[in-house]
Length: 367
Figure 1 (cartoon, rainbow, N blue to C red):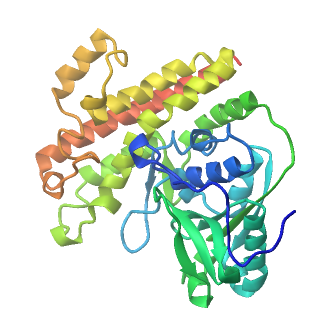
Figure 2: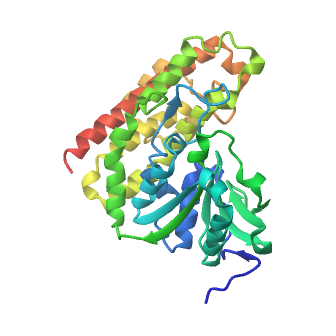
Figure 3: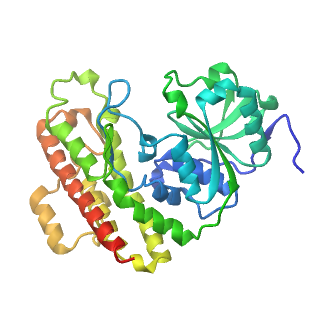
C-alpha cells in the first residue's frame, strides 16, 4: 500500500554516471536511472547513448550562448525540447510527460504534488535546466527536494520556492527546460528492434545540418575551419574559454570513439545480419587512435594503415599536442604550429565519419 509521507526517498540511490568509464552524457544516465526503477535493466546508459545517437554524433554549433560557441555537452542538448523527449522514451515503449519551466511556474503546487506522487511510487523524476539530474526524494512534506546530478553519490537538498523554480530567465528557454515524468509502458519492443532502429537512424543523424549546428563529418570540418581560419588569433588570451571554445568538442570525440563500441557490438549480437557494424566501429577506433595513441589497440589498424599514419603524423595525436581533453593547454592552443597539426588530425577524423556513414548506408541496403 502506498501512503503519503512527510519524508520519502526512492529505495536505490547511486550516481547517475561514472565519468571515468566514459559516461559523459548525463541525460543518458538520468534515463537509465528511471528505467532501473521501473525494472528495465536492459535500458541502460549505453542503450540510451545509442538511441539518442549521443555516443556517435560529433557536434559543432555556429553560435552559442554568452558569446561563446558552447551549446551543450551532448547531441541531445542540441535537439532538446518536449517533443524530442517524448520521442526518446517512445523508442523504448514508454510515455513521457514533459512539463516546461513555464508550466511549472504557472502551477507549481500541482506539479510538486505530481513529483511527490512519483517518489512515493519509487519512480525518479528527471530535471533539466542546462544541467541534468533526477529527483529521488523529498523532505518536510515537499518543502525540500532531493536531487542527484552527474557523478555525485548522494543527493543534494533544494529548498522549494519560486526562486528555485525560476532557473532560466530567457522566455524562449522556459519552453524547453523543465521536469520529465516517465509514464506507463505503452508497448513491448524487442530489444533487437530497438538496437536495429537506432543503427538505421544514424546516417540521417550523422549528416544533420541546421542553421545553428552541424553533426558528424560536417561538425569536425566546421570546428577545424574555425581553428584554421583565424577566429582565435586576434582574441585576447583572457577572453578564450578553453572548454566552451575547444575542449568540449575534443571531449565529444574522445567519448564517442570508445563509447559507441559496446552499442555496436550488442547490435551485431542481436542482429547478426548487421555484421557491417564491425567496420563502422573500426572508423571510430581510428578516431580514437588520432585522439590519443595511448588508448590505441593493435587490432584497430592493419600494418599498412599504421605505417601510413606514422608517415603522415609521426607520433602526433591530439593528446600529445596537449590539444585533447586529458591535458588540454591554453598555451598549446595559441601555438600556431600545434594548432595546424591538430587541424590535420581533426580533418582526418572527418574522413572517418564520412566513411562510417558510407558503410552504414551501404549496409542498410542489405538488411
